[in-house]
Image: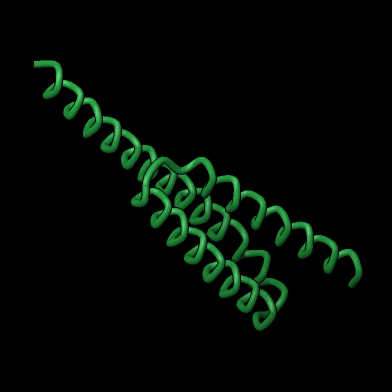
Length: 103
């Protein structure tokens, strides 16, 4: 039980530090809002996943791990692409404004 508690605490500490770093590195308000939404959705999904693991039988737990991993990695990839799209749009707006000033 102590091992599981240590893993949970390490995960919580890692998650908060990563979120703080992402918020510091964000470039505009849209990106900050997106980070907050994705972090809150990720926490909600994690809580639901852990609750499912607690209440289902052992065989189903093992069968649940593979789809949960695939869905989790797909969400992470989709969120990363959405964040990069927000950054591209913000830089495009800045470039357009800069071009208007040059003329």
